Length: 119
Image (cartoon, rainbow, N blue to C red; front, side, top):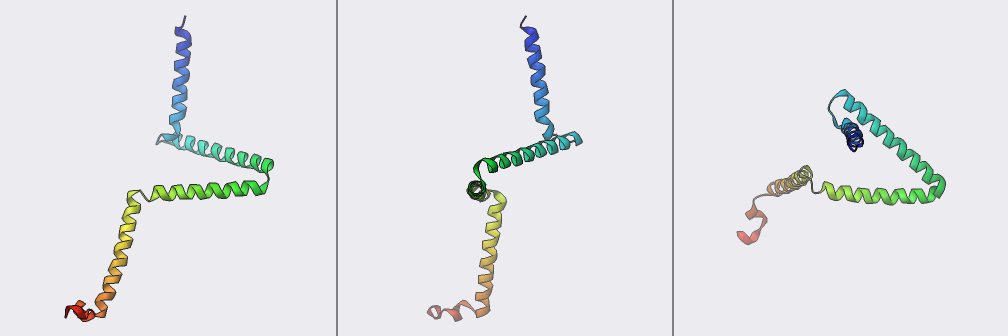
């Protein structure tokens, strides 16, 4: 008696799992599913923005957009500062700046010539 509803539930769960996994597959169907998901997401975003614009007016929505964008930018910056390639970039930038400083100091003469204390 309970086997039939459980079998239908299992089939429904397998179908849902295949739908959820589809955008992440590396084949053509996966690319198509990812494009569909992106398009639906963009459409829902535009619909939600339009509805919010109509209900709240342009001033409120622009202010909300500004604050949302600001918070997202701060969050992305905090996240990016912890990534390995960002840290490598900062180290390379600092090294190039110190290299320039050392080359300028060498161009001025030897250390003994620049600092009378050591002569």
